[in-house]
Image (tube, rainbow, N blue to C red):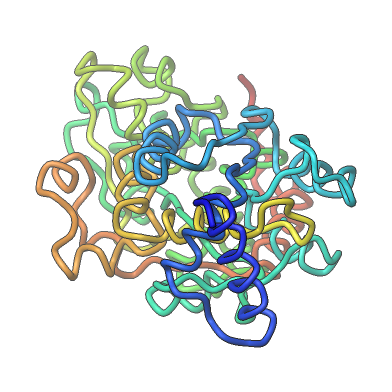
Length: 367
């Protein structure tokens, strides 16, 4: 029996074992994945969350599996459409795995586009960031933060409540239009949570009231905040995801100096999720990819790209995160109280914010 035949035989046995309700061992899974020989991904730009190095790490660990990368710039909706349009197609255009925004995971499950799989580190993924049956699971997240130009701001705000202080007149901006931008819409939720409101429509209304006060006080700047507007002084404080703030810090390279703060009164997480296609041509390679992503090595790869891996708290507690990585981030304890809103809460917040921004806040946010 040659090696190829042995691998195929092992793959058949592993598949039979899985269908009979028994878990594959890692050795069996690796053999089955190597027999398939290919993994097809989609929508993974190498500059996003350190994916370039993550993919390279997987290739180095499993050199007998090639990676077929489809459309790195695709959006979440494009990923689901790629599954739909390739049902029954076992060729290179059918993705095995997807990485999508939180709202798309449950929708894809309901449509029958996903198959369940629980990685070996399943228990370290927060319960509110995964489907109980394993159809989708949070992979990484950002938390809402403040990017602050310390050339212009003498006292760095540490909470949403601080932003209402007179010293921040004409200084505070969102990183998008809250009538259209998911990042900005969720920033409104974060402001509501800071006032004690529950995630969802309650936090949305409280957040709208907060921004109405911020606007009335003259502290809100109705300009979409970016690294450029922050450097120019137009928007010295920008509310945005921490990984975008950290990336902006690198781009600015000290000109001007900046500080990144996770507000003490609301640690709101925005989650992306992983899943395996129900029609994956290479299901074992897909499972092995998930095992890699949710291993310490894979999670740390995302962290190096400034996206907080879903197992971040577990990694810190076990001492797996290097001092260099931690030093590049806000203090680890800032993330201990991260809130992962449910899909229903995210949708309810979006509807309330989009419908109420003009009437409650009355600030036309523009580029």
